[in-house]
Amino acid sequence: MRPNRLRELFAARQPAMVGWMSFASPYAAEFYGHCGFDAVAIDLQHGPIFLDAALPMLQALSASPAMPMVRCSGNNFSEIGKLLDAGAYSVICPLIQDADDARRFVEACRYPPMGTRSYGPTRGFLYGGPDYFDRANDTVVTWAMIETPESLRELDAICAVDGLDGIFVGPSDLSISLGTKPPPKWREAPLAPALESCLKAARKAGKMAGVFCTSPDMAADMRKAGYDMLVLANDSVMLRGAAQQWLETARKG
Image: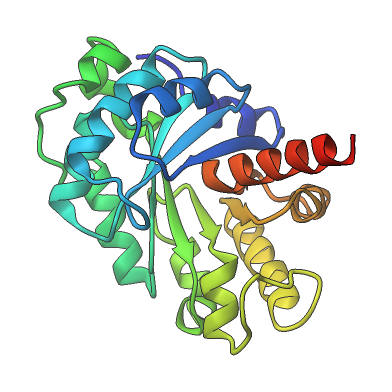
């Protein structure tokens, strides 16, 4: 089976740099996949991307060096299975509140006896290889999102779930749920200690820790802190920022 770039980086103790797709466009996915990211995540929770749009985007990523990744819209067995069958090599699941949520998510990603995933890897064979069934359980990477005070209280229990590879912090929703407004102020309380707690809990359990970074400064700080996976904003933020910078420079002459 084709190796998972994330697992290779984690084994080498190198942080993974991940792009994030909010545009429902195979061409944009293909383009983003050639930008140098270790993986590119397709976001089905927010924005206009649904299952019918995710498949051609996963196909486009397959032709790039970036590993195909998804954020499912929720802890839904059928949707998670379809995304894995379509060739996703890593899944981020939002709103994991406790160990039961995390366990149900992991089981949807793993074939028996480790889980309850149904067999039918339509594109899994094409992207992963003919031994997909034998190695998928050890290759696919699973992430539980930490976004609420409830999930913070249950961090140790969530991280202890067998088969869960890591936790992924959603700083905007976590900030809102802790009583502050976005954009997230990662250097200040209450978010700063929450980010530290997430990293410590993951390390204690031998799991990976990832975080969505809303700026280059946040990404630099999170890398310095020791986070294993850094999502560098999303395509719309990148496009807007580059366009505004070019426009400002041109108007200044």
